[in-house]
Length: 636
Image 1 (tube, rainbow, N blue to C red):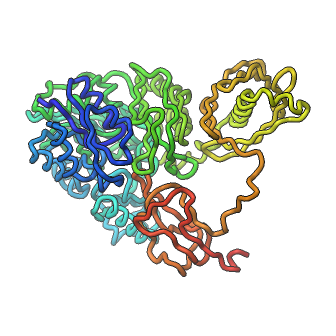
Image 2 (cartoon, one colour):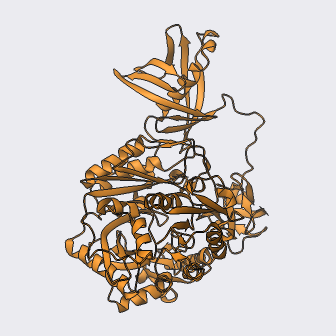
């Protein structure tokens, strides 16, 4: 029997595993980097062990240090979570060699699926349907579009879509470099890119006694940068014969490698809905596992622990019930190419959280989102008897949540859940490529939110109302995300605050924490929360701007390339050096921030006259990376 579990991970997944351990009466041990010393997963564990350093390679990816931490804390089992070492066969063997229980599949099964190319060969032998491989060296126009994928790892790294043969060589080199940097393995393969396909996966669970469960399907088609954003179970609109094919192929894949524990087999379903093709098998718990848990009424982490103890599964899984949808709330700005955001989480709360709305998070109010790890703030999961009800419930919970702090993708999630293609279950992996511009336009009501912020601020200084009552007051705010600036004006009169330029709007009351307005005869209360210059008005986030621009501030020199976010310079583009001639929009370097690589491009065409970036260097937002001096012809 397992009595104490060390979770070789951090953040949300560590907290989620700890929750189940507490319910089972199992003690918990956390590991943490220096950047994570005060985080929620450390506070929630019964014991915690420091892994000196900040970068993942120095901390969470050091298998020997994690095992030593488990032994030092008296743990008798290790749960890997997802990411980091969760699919590392050598780490699994190290855990077992130390006499600890490995809460995961056999190392041999991990190894069998560690390389996507080897996994495809195994699946072909087991009769699982596959996409035909393409030799990138021989690919031509008839083979386009192609998708390049790293053979090792996942999370969208080393992945590129190529639509023109002339771009293949450069994209192949870039994919190999990214894969080598991320996984220590530069192997990349190519296969046809299926336009309009859906990403559908099957959850499996297997014991050591020969029983394999399939726990239905999940649709994970809504992705940005090849990373999932919204997932649901069961996958809607699948023909029954296709669903049966997927589930049979998933169990065949598990049996073919002697799988034990929880795992996921992923497929592409073509636009015509026929002949699904195997993508890969994830030999771990998936981020989106809660939707399956809600539909089947199971705790997959509890089952993982019992399977690791050698317990048998019942002959068959419980029946599916209802529908569940999960949205990943990220600290990122979708309007700026999903740039990750950092800062203090001031408030994080969701209306209706309880039996039918589940929130998994690694943050609480006061915690800081750092640039060192991924940008996932929370997973919000809604369950209901029908898909339409679950989608409606999730959209309402997100829209009315208190999410105060860094910029998030909250608006994008709400708009996605209410988009006709999603509500009609007609989405595919190209959804955001088609619709991102319309989904990131400024939110309605931003200007009114700026007025509310100004009125709440005015209520803090009632004495100022008597200064020059005949003159209007003005305040400026910038909305986040998007960066739209709004200037609002109001007058302080004997009758109270009177807005200018807002016909039909009447101020009923104004206080520092709420403003009540009547618009067109309809009364609404607008809650306000202020943290320094950041103001939250309901779902709107604004930054208060100085009334007058800073006369001492100077504009950045033309051609200056500034870091768009804090991160680490991963690599420079080939040939990038002082004196090189560059073209506007061409990639110059790549920054790694929050487990994602971000391409930084030349701000103008011309000559690179300064270069301050080098691989391995840590940079902060706004730091000067390079300078491109335009030629007279180009600047003219």
